[in-house]
Image 1 (cartoon, rainbow, N blue to C red):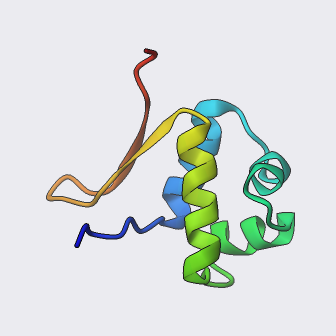
Image 2 (tube, one colour; image 1 turned 90 degrees about the vertical axis):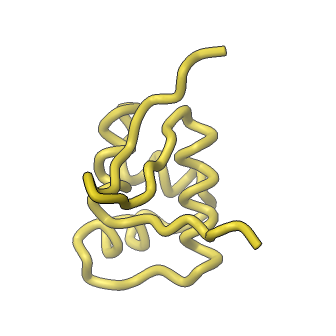
Length: 82
């Protein structure tokens, strides 16, 4: 079974920065409320697994790869154009 991706608040903020999206734009693309994104990024609330999946899918569709945590820590990077 593949390891499920985990989105951290800092990764979410960084991903939006790479693609120049506001919290509202990410929320619209993921089909969630802006307050959900805001509360997650400010670590006010954790995400439900289904909401996390929606945010990850929107971020990846926007052109950002999420990098899993290793000894260097988690991160984000722009996907290479095909």
